[in-house]
Image 1 (cartoon, protein in one colour):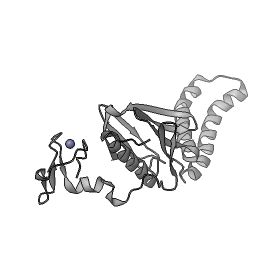
Image 2 (cartoon, protein in one colour):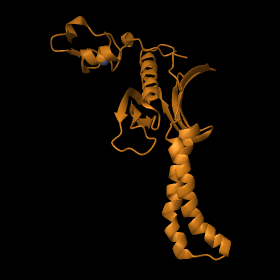
Image 3 (cartoon, helix red, strand yellow):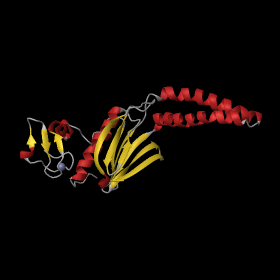
Image 4 (cartoon, helix red, strand yellow):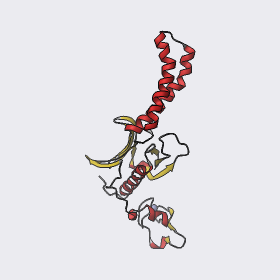
Length: 221
Ligand SMILES: [Zn+2]
């Protein structure tokens, strides 16, 4: 058995099966044996067999792993947004344009609708075309959330990251799918919001798998 933290092999004398506790002699990490076994690849997780809606591919010296954020919520959000945003923005600003008169009170009143429209249209577009993608190489990597080339990128190096975990969200909005993935260490990076749970689970396991290879100095690209 290997330490889930530093990946060094655990000496037999540091494993206590009765109490389900083991201690790593290298980094002093104390952990539950059952958790460490559940995290190992003995459950048949196959990095190179991504489920529907996810992908993995090797490019020049890097590995790309991704998942779509496509969601049936789009069938609701798009018509809703056309009516809601069209009605409010058109009503508030369209009438001013049509009359050729600027109305400062009405324009101020419309600002929350403008902000709401931007947020909900982003969600609606993510639910149609969006993706979450990890690009990894031997130095580190980046997470990308967005449409095509437009989106949010967060970069990290491997020495900044020591663990990967799933986080359940305590606040939900349409299309949020209720969770994300956290990369933690010197920095904390979260990604994977809006990805359906089964796809997010693949990203999570893939990232965990690669991180353990990186920490034991194995090549993954
Ligand atoms: Zn350790």
